[in-house]
Image (cartoon, rainbow, N blue to C red):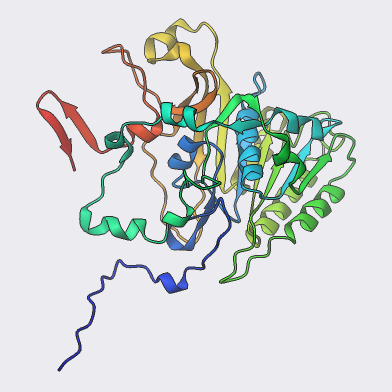
Length: 363
């Protein structure tokens, strides 16, 4: 009797080649990419899962507002909640004092109040025969509501991070204010990254590096543009061969245009934030929900690891809002208030469906 062979599709993944891990805060993506969370659920969805391990993320600051600190705080807090070692470099004299401003994960009660419509959460609809290939081997890394951790938390900006997250972690704080050259910082990063070697089939605990206002005028090396560019190139090389992610914020207005473009070219993921004028009547007429916005986030580049396929985003500019004045939310910009409805969060608006009086058209 002939043995029956299981029918396989050319779209199926080879799960045996996918390494297993019990480390919290990791999530598998396509082409063997492993993500860690940015700490902002909407930003993770925009980027296709989060920040890929081995990538350099650069955030261009707004010289008139510290909106980049919102991204940096959530990124650092998410790592500490997942017990991922952190290296934080700051131009302030006491970098450890910044740890007291990190937000805490929202309570279960707050999470329930922020649950969205499941029909809207589906986002981009996928044909049923291919849907299973996107869900396999991902459940163990998604949010664990009943367990200890979630892949990405909603952080309450009004509530400071509990002390036990700060006391039991491997946190290395560095002040770069009085640093005359970047050799010491480069060596510090190299030593930190030796904890996270990238070995095939074995995922070590992921690490995070956060560097705030890298070319700040408080730093003595701020006029050494070639040295700073060399450091970024070295950091990117070290990050690429490790299971870690580095987030570097910098004010582009303090750099010459040519060096600013070079810095942006070095980034795997490039973001920028800017403030919104308090009373811009023209902008208020153009955008819905203008009064609730605190700033704008632009996505200039999305990291592509192990692939050459470009990313085509539904939108590249998003409004930054504080839901209930506590939770950071990113929303697609809606033009001209037609029905007096405000914009919806990225997670609820990324759908290939149109709504009409006769019903919903899905494709």
